[in-house]
Amino acid sequence: MSGGPFGVSSAGARDEHSRAAAEGAARSSYGRLVAFLSARTRDVAGAEDALADAFEAALREWPITGVPQSPQAWLLTVARRKLVDAARRRRNGELVADTLQVIDGIFSDPAADDGLPDDRLPDDRLALMFACTHPAIEASARAPLMLQTLLGFDAATIASAFLVSPATMGQRLVRAKAKIRQAGIPLTVPERGELPDRLAAVLAATYAAFTEGWADAAGASVRRRNLVDEGLWLARLLASLLPTEPEALGLLALMLYAQARRPARRDAAGDYVPLALQDARLWDGALLDEAEALLRLAGTLARPGRYQLEAAVQSAHVARRISHGTDWPAIVGLYDALWHITASPVVAINRAVALAESGDAAAGLAALDALTAEPRLRDYQPYWAARASLLARTGRLDEARDAYRLAIGLETDEAVRKYLQGCLLRL
Image (cartoon, rainbow, N blue to C red; front, side):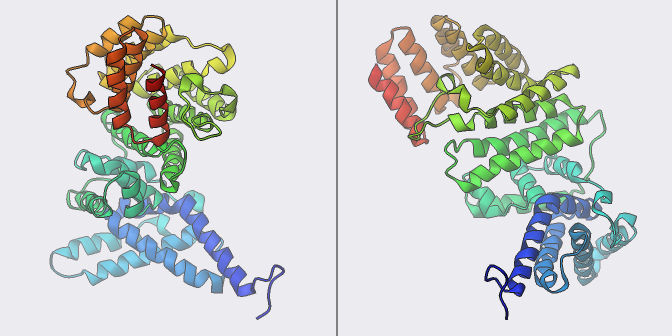
């Protein structure tokens, strides 16, 4: 067999080209195809299995027949046939009705034509996102279910990112998909009156995926780094499909502000750098400009919400790249508004720190003292780190040392732990 110009056989080159085409189709179309098939069968697991078979067939056939002009349409056709074959094998007893529904639904849909151009395939991804966050689905499964159905992540990868065992995550995902099928959860975008409550769950699941990856500040974990990228992908999808929903725009802006600061979160030695000490020259200006534009657009829609306010806080922080200072009183005001919406103790902690940064450490410490009865904060590292800092500022050094020791014991990130140990030593 003759080699190519770089010593690669022509067959090897065809294999590589076919694999690259299949990977490209998976990246651009996996969620869209699963959503299209699931919307017609309400069988998410069956749609995933059929599509997996279609990709396997593509890797076998494309090196021989060539990559089709429309890989997405080819994959859809094969996946449809796999679904129908599976349905026919179940044509007994109580499954007859389901079988006929699958066959009739898939073949009667004009969008299922073999020659369907990619841009004519109905986009049901938003409907699938709402199905993944239906109230009947357990909360701990919603973000993982979105990652698997829309992005094709396997259960082991998702389990690693969410710090649970693969078996536990696998069971959650199986139960969630079974619930969609058994309870007849529709894969539809809710009516306008239902949208606010359901949209909140979709946004929360998207943000949960992003923050799981964001926790790995050094980017050492490939799986968690992928979660950041895919969380942003989901947020961009939401913003593009819901361009008049200000909270969808606000969430994307919030995530872009965070991602823009990633290069400055560690110094050249890998040590943790808190936001106030980060070198603004290392921030990604293009991402910050995009975030600012999204936040302004959301503001024109005149429906403020949690994600817009959180993004506004980040906007106030990054404004020092231009103004060389931080408007802490404005940040306190934004946290006041956030507290009114969320009543979150995390918001209260951040507000207390902002109060101290505004020049009134005693008021900030008093605000933290008001949270001492909150049981969720007993093992919450940021609470003890903030309390240690404010105790030190007000001269209560022994108490500050105790709080720093608690914060150090609770911290899992070695770089942050080293930073807190330095703070303790400086006392």
